Image (cartoon, rainbow, N blue to C red):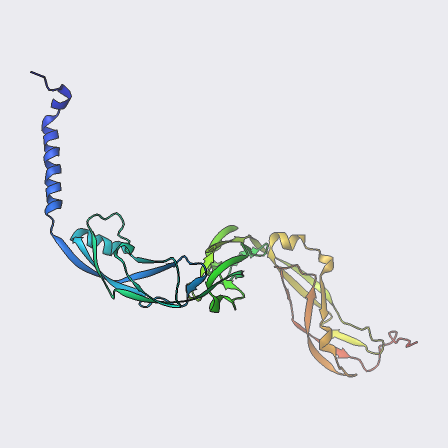
Length: 326
């Protein structure tokens, strides 16, 4: 008589218990009552692979009621996780098409034993128009303000600067730019690469490639630097016109990223009266006019102690300043 291997006899009570538990669970699943439930508002996702056409409008309807059969437990899990009905359109033969929904278009995942009983409504209406593909520049939107202790040290850089848009010709043809989701400046704490989604919400289902872009953000600590008694220049190129400015000098405060403020060429900094604001002045006239500041690099802010000065056209040139018209 053959002997039973000792390995099979080791912990035999535990093994028998595990086998009995497995049989019990299998029997429980097999005897679980079947159910039929309806999932309301299941989204329809239309996938058009015919490159010559694009959806002209959202599907009608956009959602359906889905009646399922099977384990009540699995139906509840599917309802909790969500599902969709993916409608594949491989070829378009008409601008307006009625499509009958099919059971195998429902995404059931790995849930065994579930069956699709019916759809309500069982069909959907689709409208198509010729598709158009166009390369469109990105438009970067900002919201909020940088923290007060930070300043941009270079312009924001978007990569890529253009995206490919494919969609209904009526929507894509007139498109001259496409926005990104807003960049929230208040959340920036350091230089970084930020991923932003292309906002295609107003394109009627058009596809955008790539759907996301990178935005390069470079910031530095903000510093301020002041310059006192900068002379205000006024145009006296006309030998017959003599002008005086009050005040004759102003203080200018520069603010910006540390590297930009500390390395700027201060010899280029010049405060002057806007020439166009002096047009038509008559002798003896006083006029409040705006200042302009030149020589300030991009991303650096210049704030004068006053943004306007008084310019007076003298009736007669001052002593020693009379010019020989010859």
